[in-house]
Image 1 (cartoon, each protein chain N blue to C red):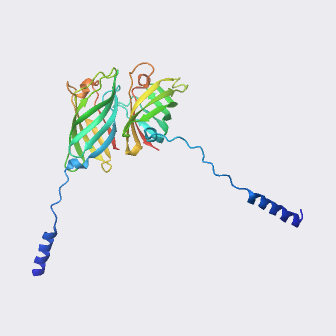
Image 2: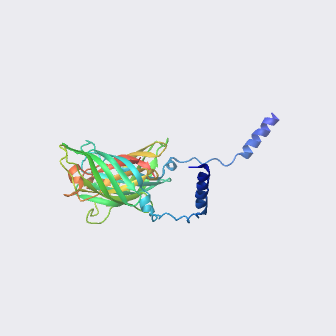
Length: 154
Length: 165
């Protein structure tokens, strides 16, 4: 009994501070390159990068071709959340377009929201845009295109 | 040949070779070091199109990056009733600092087959590249004005994922 009590006391004394629980957002960190199927429209293609900071912030670059417009090097910035279980999440970003003859600031200030799903040891991310075809959202300015496709960790 | 003569000959040869001083090793002419903006992509990649929901414009092929800014390839593409197998691609590429993105411009040489009839011959295919998996995966998206002379007009906008061989 005394021995057990001593062992317990020792155990408690030697225990370090409680281990911080890694929030799910920390599971997604780094840069992914993505392509897009651009569902619902044959005249659109896109690719880009997404960089998750592990703490709920996401930035990216988006190259988008649509009927008669092409925007190379648009930037994105926003937030993301990884769901418990670390198998899925969602991100919402604001797009800063490029002001040149080919793009003419198309989509500037638009919202790009997406659901994403993780696989392959977090190296693969499958995403689909979840925006409506309405003013202020990317599909409205890019010929109704809805982005969806795979992304691969850098 | 008599035995003594043969031995003498061998001795002479040995002496001759023994007297040869090896010339200082000349360094092979080394190629100039290529900047990482080219070497980040090198080797063969197979690609397949990321087609739209109805899959109307599928394409697949290979791309070979030489690590020096040049890229070649072979591709097959289909658009409506046109099918072109074995078209070739030649062009240039570069990778941006950070090595996560870049660009390439490719010129298409079509094939004169019954199903293709040189469709797309001489067209240009400019693509934005995004790079992942340490350079083993590339996402390509065509970036042009969607006007005559570009791949997009004939075969639909090109979007694809390429994987290193």
